[in-house]
Image (tube, rainbow, N blue to C red; front, side):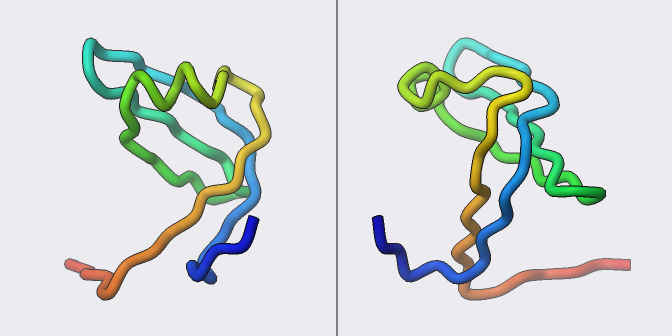
Length: 67
């Protein structure tokens, strides 16, 4: 599959918190953690579980930082 997003990070799912509508999925990319909120339907469709290998794809027009 081709995709325009260039910010892609390979990692492993380290935790999943499943709610009624959404799921919080934390991915370890080798020292950094990325948290994604996805639908429970997507969680089940992707068959994600702790230890699953995934690619986090980030597409954003801006990234805001605050200190």
